[in-house]
Length: 578
Image (cartoon, rainbow, N blue to C red; front, side, top):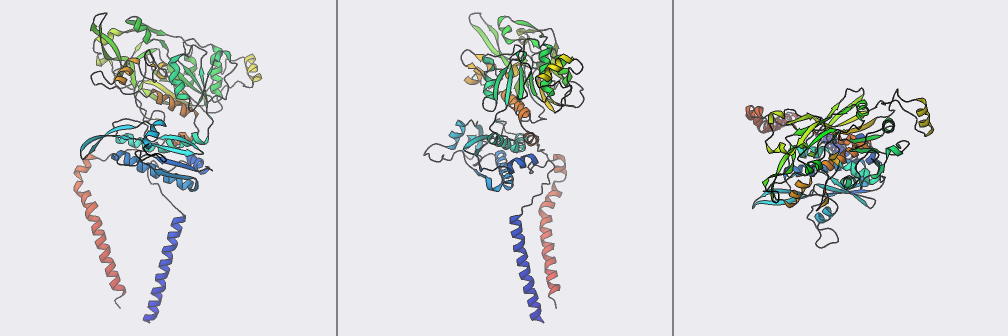
């Protein structure tokens, strides 16, 4: 009898071993994951998964987040590795990756380090002050990756903010944008064709050195050319984006009809409009100037789509600096940098992929923008004033003497005044019942029949400031980066002015984000809209329930193990008692 029982036990043991081996084989062949997070932070979007699965050539990813970093960047490195593991599972044969220290020696060189090649590739390091045993030391961090594909490479910015002061929310935002940043770079490698962007010149738009920064922003990823709307029979559908920047000549009804029909056919348009004549150059000639309406004849067109650029000027206590004469003599003036409320520095609510993690954007003599209750049109505020702002109506007197006295804070009692808005949807034509048969027939003859309503969804971005994407020109330095005024930029370069440091503006990044959103495919947009919520612990409950949770996390697991062990011993005794 004992022999039979032993035989059964031995057979049962072999079946158990076989079952364990079988489970391991299945586990290695079939990998299942369950993302239980509310925002699906570990799930690749369906559109991105499709693009990655269709890759037919190998891609290699080098991530430069290896080494001793602050905890925030270690967390970002772990999230980047998790993401790369996810996409490798989608297309294992064509995706490989490795983590590299920027201080490692570049292959084939004796002294050249990776960080030197990264700087040459356009990577901007973050200079952090890190606490070490010996005290503090400066450490350069390169939160970037490089994707190699078919002999080409593309830089991926894993931490778009670039601020020296790193917050948990910024790291959180960077983690949420990992899929977007990688996918954007991957599509640029796999789809080398560049979108066409037309810069309108038909209505007095600037074309001189003040547009240098626009050309620099667009030259790598877009095909930029000028388009005189007044001389074109229609705006071609081959354009990805039409840019209208600071026009100074009124638009004719014929020009507006061309823009309207371009939008009705699904065309994307960027409006950077100065509704008032107010220029900084005027203040250099005399101490005051009057801002008044340009009469561009665009109000009804934009109103039809859901936006209105107001004939006002926005003033903000959160603003840029301007050089003022505060004393001295005419031959030897004493100057000082003072805040100039007409140069507001915008923050954003970070509610959209365009403005998320954007930073500060500088305006110059800005008009506020209202949204109109337009059916089926989605409206998103992209830029807004601070909590200490106000507007003044036109005609408005602008005087340099305003900064000789401290602005009265009680006047700056408005907050979050919109200055840039995104409009999305199927727009209705302004000329729905206003175009005669002759015009319609001529449009049909040109192959662009008149549309009363948009057949496809389109997107518009309306900004109440034309100077926001233009650059100033310094006599010593030439064209300056977008968003800087020549006074503060000179001080920034010198790093003087009593130890004051000016924050670089994100005007360039804002324009880049607008163009990317208007031109990229839905996969990029879906990935960019991912958010990871930073959930904080309730400090009050922590204080009140501290002892309970300590017991639960320390004592309870030990009790479970002890009870399980005692129960197992008792069960074993009962089984073999006879």
